[in-house]
Every structure is written in structure tokens, then in C-alpha cells.
Length: 374
Image (cartoon, rainbow, N blue to C red; front, side, top):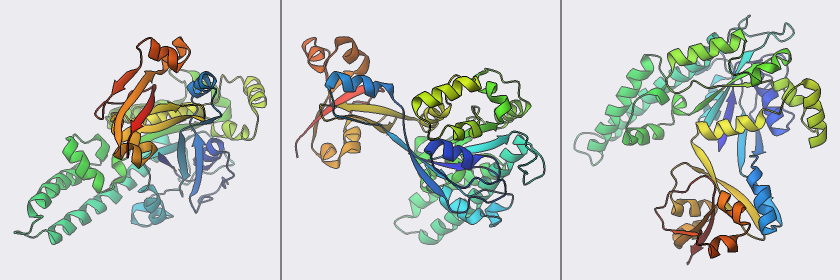
């Protein structure tokens, strides 16, 4: 999973990237302190792995990972090449999803490119630039399909179908709406996905608040005008983007390099219950509709990331193509049952081990042993 971190200059996205990845990406208080993209790999915290390791006496644990990419700042006119726009758009097309960091803090020492703090204006700026870029992309694709699939050609009929879908997409974009909010069939979705549209990608909205407002992280209805404005805007304008994730990027960055004891002491000193980064990782899974299945043995306990709805045979292919090609069956035990019984053998003796075929839909918490023959 690759998540691209975007935001206006001085929104705090590079600071948040550093906190997430333990990196030292430039995070200066001036526009375009990020020029080249920065990449960091983050382990996905999963307490189940520690429990399973003890049951199997496994030699190592391998966590699932997320790749975060800190992308050059976006400004008005980026869709037309303004600022670092062309570079930004090329980088973000490679992402599975977008983390949009929105500035929700005041600091006279960190200038805002538009001269004032306004989260709604900032969100609209980026959304509109993505929409304009998608409009151009869709228009070019329609023209290319028309050129490559003349009447009477083998691809003409399918080309007409795709043109019809893309023309509906273009109309939707012209109304300044995001493609991911557009009603579509699974067939439409597959065609649209091929176009690599930016507003089709899932997006996580992150409100980056100031250190003095850290208590907002734990409040169900934070008394912070910036956050309230963000939520109202998203609820009114978009169908599928109502969640606002709250983070204090500067505090999170200050904890980089601390061991667990130091981190716990720092959080207590700040009056914070926990780091918010694990929650952001979980938000990434929800937004991209992902889940984990587990494998276990004396050598290794491991978590594997797959889309929700993945079949057993495709999950096997996530591990190795040979397992998918030679798939025989999946032997599955539920995590909670394994913990309750205490061992794989006890689950088997109790008849709690399930045998599933290729079309079985893998569930969160499944611990799977794949049988195969190549």
C-alpha cells in the first residue's frame, strides 16, 4: 500500500511524514522545502503477532507495511504546471491513496502561502487542482480512444462503451465533484480505474493542529473552529469523505527516536493518552478497504495485506505465485479460537480447523496454512 502525503506548503505534511517514518525529510517554514519526493516504509502495528509468536515459539515476526510518500507541495495553478505542479501530479498518480494534510494551527513564524489560515479554502484548492488535472486526463483519453478505434475496427464497440463512461465522468468533474463520489457499477469502476484519475483515489483528510490543542485528538466533538469547518465542508460537499483524522504532527515528530519508556514518559508529561500514528495507519486500511490475514509457524509469524473480499487463491498468490498456481486448499483457524485453545494442534483435535477452497473469501483474523502442489 502506497499513500501519498499532500498539502499546501507549510501545512505540516513533511513534519508528519518524519513522525510516521522516523525520517529527516526537510520541513522548513517556507514554500517548497520539499522538492523531491521522500519515501518511508512503516510497519503496521498488530498486537496479534506477538501473541501468535508465543504460541508457535516462532523465531521472528514480520509485520505488514505501508509506504508513505511525502510529495512536493501543491498550490493554485498546479494543474497547469504552477509551482511544483507537474511533478506533484506525476508522483501522486503512482499512489494507491492520498493523505491530505490540512493546516489547522496558527503560527506567525510559519507563513501561509495565501496569507491566512482557512482549512476549507485549502481543501478546495487541492481538490480543484486534482479535478482540473483529471478533466484534462479524461479529455485526452476520450480523444485517444476515438483515434484508435474507428468505426468498423475490432475495438470500436468496447471503445464506445468506454467513451460513454468517460463522458459521464467528465460531466461529473465539470460540476467540481470528485470521481470517487460518482455513482458507478463495478464495470464502470474498472474502466475508470484504468484512466488513473487522481480524484478516484481514496483520500484521508488529516487536520494538523497546534501543540496547545492536543486535547482535540481525544474529543468526540473537538471545540476547534478549524476542525468544525473541515467536517461541515466535507459533510455538505462530498458523499464519501466525512472522516477527519486529527494529529499534532510536531509532537509526533518530537517522539521520533525515543524508546518505548521515553515515549510513554513524554506522552504522560504532555497529558496525551497515546501516539495517534497507529490510528492513522488503521485509517489507511479503512479508506483503502484493506485487511490482514496471518501465517504462522516455528520460523515466522507474519501479517499480509490484501483488499477486503480477496479469495483464498489470490491471498496465496500474495505470498508467492507458486502457491496460487498450485493451490489445493487453505487450512484456516480463527485467531480468537487459536488463542482460546492455546495451540494449532488443540484446534485441530477439537475440530475447529476449517478446510476451504479457492473461492473462499478471506476474513480478518484468519490464520492460514496453504496446501499446494506445483
